[in-house]
Image (tube, rainbow, N blue to C red; front, top):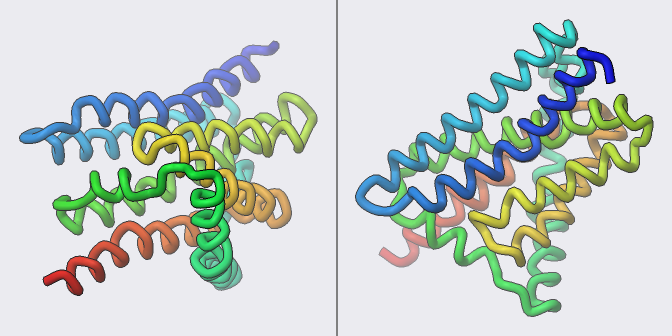
Length: 224
């Protein structure tokens, strides 16, 4: 393996395993009274991982963002993003919840309960950083570089998808992590079809915003 591909391979390891390490570490340290500070540090850690991957792209590979499917944001990207978000909320989400019930797996309640009491600004921050970071790390960079390293789009799609699901275990548990394979597969197929990472980011952020920020706020409003 040439030095160029060695650095890219190391970037892949950081991109795919780094978020898992952060999720595990933040889960252990995010206890009162320092819970919010630990969670903010976890978000900062995701930003650092993205920065490392960007350094690999720009300074070692001498590539541009288009090499990971990230191009100037267009109306078409926004449109695709919102179409995907609606599809996730009204078509994929019912399938995911059905799968959880069908296989008697734990629901998303454990993860959502951990978000209770957190300020809205943090939830918005986490949704934006998480959506952008996960799409860059698990879709654009990982898919493109694994495809280049192996010559296989199947491996390029499957490996990041599995790791993406595992990355959700510390926060949400094995049931929801298993269920994220469904939306993750949709993201992967769409990316392989359109190579439009901006649309994936828009869809990811909008979907998570609806589920993590808007949903709990509506529940609080009805309870008050």
